[in-house]
Every structure is written in C-alpha cells, then in structure tokens.
Image 1 (cartoon, rainbow, N blue to C red):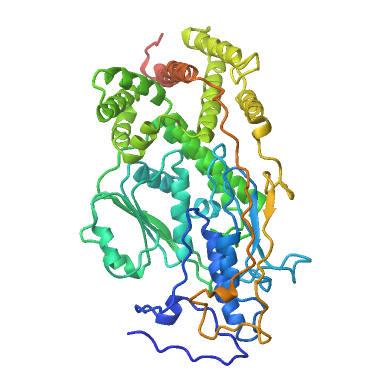
Image 2 (tube, helix red, strand yellow):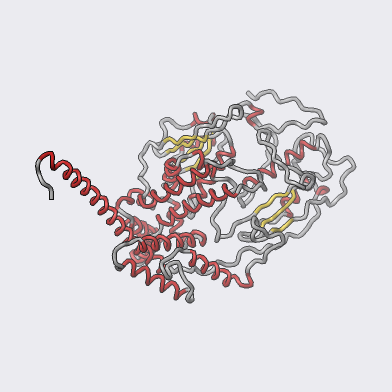
Length: 579
C-alpha cells in the first residue's frame, strides 16, 4: 500500500526532489505524470540532466516565478537544437536562461561552480563520434576496474561474448546502467543484438527473467527474489554492492554463476587481456572516481587514461580473436560459391573460422561462431574503420615483436613479413609502413593512414567550427538560448502542479531554421589490403608456433638441468658417477 503523500510545502519552500523509492518506501506507486525523452541518439547523462532540470525549474517556480515558460524551453529543445552529425562539431545548448547550476538529485553531492560562471546559464554539450573513433561512453571504467578483479571481468566477457544471460543487481539505477553500457562498449566491434533492459519495472516485465534467449537485465536487490528457481544453467549474476553513506564502507561486488561450465577463453588472447586489465585495475584503485560524472564535468586525465586503456585492451582482444576471419571468409565463399545460398555461405565461413583456431581455443571459438553477434559481423562484410585501423596496427606490432625476438636465422615466416612490408610500402606510394625498415612499431602505418584520410577528405572535410579545442576537436556549434515569441505575463510562470502537460501555441518559441552541420567526410580507402592482413595472420601462426616450441624447449632444458644437477649432488652419497 502506498505511503501517505508528503505534505505540500508553502510557496516559499520548494518541495524536495525525492525518488520513487523515497516516496513509496518500497511499495508500488502510480505516477500521474512521467517525463520521458525519446531519441535516436544515445546520450543518457545529457538526457538525465535535461529531465532533472525540468523538474528543478518547476520546483523553483514556486518560490520565484520563471520569466520564460517551461513549454517554450522544451519546444525550443525539440525544434531548435540540432542533432550533432557523426564526426562533426559538438552542439552546445542552453535549456533555460534561469538554470545556472547543474540539476542534481537529493542524494547527489553539490557540484562546485566554475569560476566566473555562477550567474551564467548552464550549458549542455552533445557530440557524436565519427566512424574512425573507438566508441566512448558517458560512464567511467575506473569504478568497475577498481571494484571487479581481472578474472571476474574476463568471466563476464566470456558470458557476453557467447551470448549467455547476465543479470546486474544494484539499488543504484545509474550504477547499474553505467556498468551495462561499459560492458556493451567493450564488445566492440561486435554489437549486442539480444534483449537489453538495464532497469526493469515491477510487474509483468519481470517475466523476462524466465526467457530462454540471451539477455542483459538489471534488477534491484528487492527484485532479486523474482529470479526463477532453479536458476537457468547459462545465467550469470553480477552484484554491484553500494557504499554506505554513513560509515563509508564499500559494498561487496561479486559474480556468481553460471551453473553450466563456460568454455575457457583462448590462451593466446586470455593472457594478454589479463595482463592489461591487471595493470589498469592497479591504476584505477589509486583514483578518486565515480561511475558517472555530471553532464559537462570532464573526468580527470588519469581516469580518461584508464578508460582509453580499457577500450584498447578489449579491442586488441577481438583483433587477435578475429584475425583469421579474412581467410575464413575466402575459404567459406569458395566452398559455398556453387550453392549461392547466404545461410550456407555463413555456415562455411563459420566452419573455416573454427578450423583455423588453435586446438586449445576451439571449444570457445566454436560456440562463439554460433552467436548472433558473430553472424552480424561476418554478414557486414567489413569491420568498422576504427576497429580495422587498431587491428592492423596491433597485428603489425605483433608480427614485428615476434620476428625481432627470434634467435634463429630468418625463415619463411620472417621473409614473408619483410615481403609484406615491401608490398605495403608499394601500395602506399613509397610511404613507410608498420613493417618497414627494422620491423618497428605500427605508428608509421597509422600516420600514413591519417595522411591518406586527410588527402581523401580534401575540400569535403568539415571545417573547424568556432570554439574548437582539445575537448571538441571538430569544433563547437552554439545554439542561441530559447526565447518566447510572445511577451511573458507580468506575474511570470509558476508550476504548482509540476511540469507542463501540454504545449499551447501562445507559448511557442521564436522559430529559427535548423543549421546544416557538416559531419565526417567519406571514409578513405584502407591503407592495408585484405591480402596483407591474410599474410599477417599466416605469419603470426608460424611465428607463434615457433615461439611456443622455443618456450617448451627452454622448460624441458631447465627440468633436465635440475634433474642432472640433483643427480650430481647425490652421486657422492651413493658412490655412482653421472655423465
């Protein structure tokens, strides 16, 4: 039964901003008005700031009427604020001229105002990354890397990469959403196509937990009892424990399940990712961070470094896992050429991809190849430009490091790597590639690709908008603040019943045409050909086999030395001689 409604305060005292949990004390409630933003773009923290701002302004109007109506401000937001184009300038807009501080919930700490900006309207920024950039998130990875151990992160990666079921449990909605967003980001270049509901309301929606298909679902601790009994064999539960505001004690973060054994990650990729995550977790543990920062508040440089390091670590994982895919595409296409059936061609590519994997990796790769994410990635025919560039640089550096670490004379694999470098330089017009010269790093190939992108862009490249800076390298487009087309009443606007529910024509904003913001130019042709990528994969297979044989030989030699040394020490005691 709902708790009694709080007493309505006087006009001199705005009501406090309470959450549904505060009002209901855990019971189900009926909300007569619900504010919702529907958009084709995903900017959760900006949307949160807008919704909180509307509620904050409606409360503030009880104490001091507003000079500009909320109807005008919201109409201006929907009609006059353009969507930022991918790879183009960021969009800066003011929701309401009387909103001078970031809106926040009652449980959030007050943000320190910027110097000189106490009386200026709060501005929000929205930017759409280009296809040549790695995906980013409004949420910081430092909080997850501090609370979850590297083996737990790898366990969650196994669950999601194989499209099993994951349930996130937390009473903090934003922590739950932020963790889910980061997990999806780390799957790049794969795209999660299954059910994704990071916040499930009470009622029939909880029946999703009984579904047999893959999902990512978020629950509160009170909803945890709705999990089916017994738990599905492929269900993993991640508990994101909350910190105590009174004692400062840190909540427990734990991972349990699934009951069915997971195929182990491929050893080659598992070791490299575990090493990178261990280093990042140590760095994240020394930072003061939050899972999500207020809109417009930039994260510290150290936290941004952790975010970038985590993105690259997972991108390198999938670059290594998918490196044989170009050869598998060719093999599968050749096998299914006579059939002319897309489904059969996909099955042939899956089979070829699994056959090219190492024997120890095949249990994981064979199940991974059956996922919907893998099928979408294969049917797309081409990886995203940002992933392809990172993958090329990673494979080039891997070939270079293994080739230069060999102590034996150059053999077919190393000669192949050198010939690849020569062919790559020829294709790039004589520019040094990642494998040119002394088989150095991939920085040269990356620079050449950037130069090629600049030449391909030419005059079509978007000019830098006014206000370009390090935070907005593509420029910044500022939208004029909202203005009412009609004169406001002398008494101003007050909202004792909460935010508005209709938008009369008399409160329409001043109409202004939407600007045409230029986005990114067409992507340049890839600097590395598919033939070179196939050659890199073949070279890596040979070089890694040679490195593994060398390590095995060193281990056997060390064991033999230990045995012989022990026998020599024992020889005087038994009166025998060891040669």
